[in-house]
Length: 220
Image 1 (cartoon, helix red, strand yellow):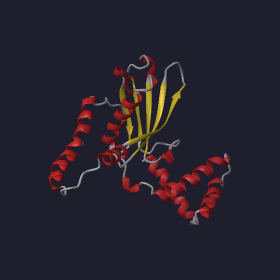
Image 2: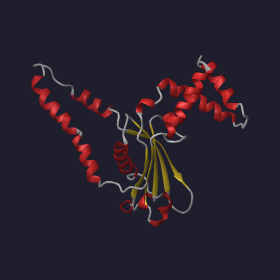
Image 3: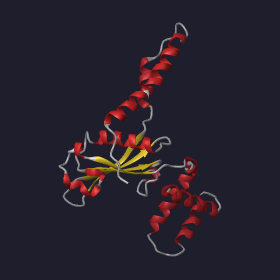
Image 4: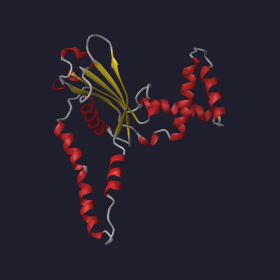
């Protein structure tokens, strides 16, 4: 389903509102600071600068399909965003990449963990292009971003079904082993499952459940 992106001022307003609780908290706490103690300005600044953002662009790639210039971006999103938050992050990502890249269409693929990059994006995708359509890239000149809008294919996740860090490690090991085999043998999955169960000292059925859990997590 294709939706028009919201005006940029909406996203800027939202980001601005995020600072209000911090300002209120500062006004409340400041009078109660113990006398004689000073805040280390350098340390405070470092803490703010090192605070994780809402997303990380892990990879970008130029797609050569025809004469149009297209980019794909693999984006790992931090936290547990809903669809509206992913739409806001989409705008932030586009604001960032258009400052350095020139294209006629861009595809943003969203992941909740970098281990999934290269597979189906669990959080969905967003296309920034003419009418939000990847195939219409050649209708505009490179860099004509004012003539582009978003097309959304985002997922509202049930975060209770998200894989744990250990499950992700097991799944990644299984997936790498499976892809490395490059075989159509009918028992390949069972063979790989046995290998990973031995490596992690786990019951093969548990490994199978983790692989199935990841498949469901990516699809729904």
